[in-house]
Amino acid sequence: MQANAVVIDNYGDSNEFHDALVEVPELKPKQLLLKVAGSSVAPFDISVRKGVFKDDFSLNMPAITGTDVVGEIVAKGSAVDQFDIGDIVCGMVGVKGFGAYADYAILGQSKAAKIPDNMAVEIAAVLPMTAIPAYNSLFDLGQLVPGEKVLIHGGAGGVGSMAIQLAKNAGATVYTTASPRNIDDLKKLGADRVLDYHTEKFEEELSNLDLVIDTVGHDTYKHSFEVLKSGGRLVSLVESPNEELADEYNVHAMYLSGKFDNPLSKVVELVAGKKIKLHVQKIFPLNAKGVKDAQDYYENNHVFGKVALIK
Image 1 (tube, helix red, strand yellow):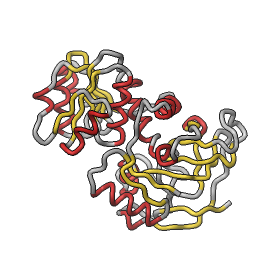
Image 2 (cartoon, helix red, strand yellow):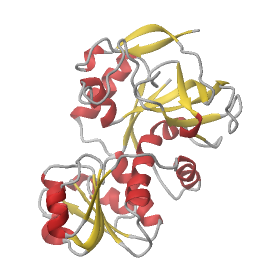
Image 3 (cartoon, one colour):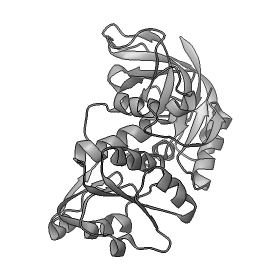
């Protein structure tokens, strides 16, 4: 079976994207074949295209990238027992496999979640890459419990804005950092205090926190140790643990990695129940020009929330 796809032949800038006809691989026993309805642009996707992770994993060129996916199940492997043909699901596809920027995508059963009929396709398209890291960092690694105080850096981003709402929904007091243009919007999402990172130094304003979620890295990561109480937890999505600072401040420093149970179905329920909101700032068509334009837009603008790609 052949399908149209957006591919790259080499690592590089967004001009590498072009349309091509590709062969769809045979399904493994626990895989789903989706007719793609939408995907998204995430910082991870841009980094993959640039070759940032090529020493950790290499793409087989020509490669189909794109991690978020939503679509209809049109075929399933012999061992799939949780979904039926015709179900609409969303999930994260494997980065080394058959990516989401195509007419069809291959998704592992364990990485999929069924979406309700009333969920807009652009919302489902941007959900997985925000929901999964936000949930895993807060609850699986961060062990957040009701009544605790948490600082979430980069609150206006997809993961940050999701983490704010998940933490607030769990009964935490939530602090976040953002630029002035996003302060009011983040308060509406549930942040108890939003610090303007242009004029306020969070390490001088906050102290005795239970948990910090770092999506920024560099100096932000280093200063995060200063605001945690003894025995506090620091989870970074971008920095490996600094053991020296962890020992100095008696903090548990962790990097978001490893395998956890898929929380996507839980978050889908929260979104469907209007307890969690996702903001899609802009929508582009899912073709080579659309993917190029979408990734350029993401890199060159201060995006609040997510950018979607829709068939």
